[in-house]
Length: 427
Image 1 (cartoon, helix red, strand yellow):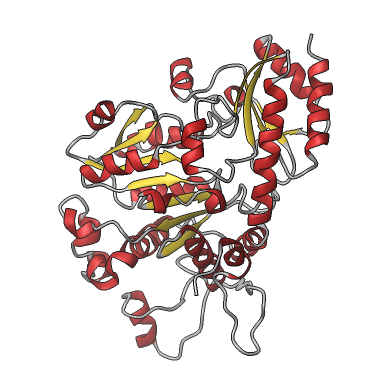
Image 2 (tube, rainbow, N blue to C red; image 1 turned 135 degrees about the vertical axis):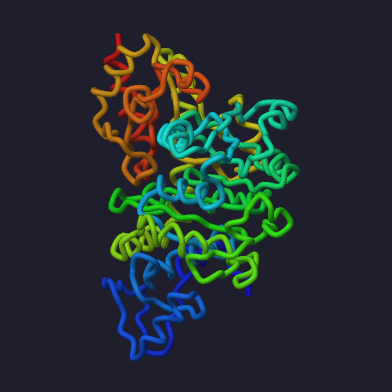
């Protein structure tokens, strides 16, 4: 029986047997005991499944990863220590020195920096394209050594909506997968795999946790991309891995398991950005109410956006669910049940007015965070995106006066009242 997403949020990933705990147990241990070294050898050679060291895999993490894979409609998933680690592993699992990536320019500043600078120092080049570029401009960005396309369902904080079908079609026409960061809508409001995405990532620190309690990330594989049809592009998946006695991931684990198994066996083994079992447990608690919270976040975001749009001291407002917004049509297609609780806007008077507004808020707190049960606010050009120059900020859809307001699950009327009194302080 296929379960609805709310049921999966509550019960997915962990099916206790007779006499077993109803809640996912925390396996807060580093190692497991075995009777023979031969058994452990088979685990190290990937000939058997099992646990031997938490840096590679842990039962608590696997249960939570399985729930998120089920929520996204994927076949396998792996938790990471942060959303940044998830995006890095997702790309680096199939692209490295001498390779090329195409990415939307409207993405989170940390991810932009990862692709534009950090991975460039590792020998990987990235071409950024406007998410609303023409088909011809998108096709022109590809090179023979392109290995993937990357974008965000809803860009942070520009709130551009990715045309997933169009970007997936372009990626597939060039024999590469589309990776989509689905942090802002979560699978409750959008499931990119259903629109053609091949790999989905999340910063679980955000809505999935939802309470500012734990840092984490996740990679979900759709299991649909045929790595063997483009074997020359992805030798790491289709040719023998000598670090595991010549295992070929696509042969031993099939298309549904090859990508995540390689990410675990190679990248997690060597780079070690594992999520702690305690954080995985906390994220699972957040997942249990995700379907309820996302409805409230989206409703609050829309209500606040409508209020801001009618306020004389507000220069502009951006929210995908706001009628007349440039992203409204794409949001209606991909996010018919609501987009997210994040609203971007500018206060008349520019940067100085923005600072006055923010320091006078009472309920909303200035924090380097977003997508939380509690409303928080940030000035991205002075914080998360301050490493970008003016041209890069413009390409990412971020102006110097942009304020990112992340609406929590408080009463919308109280949020609007708080915004009103803060705007009243702006001259």
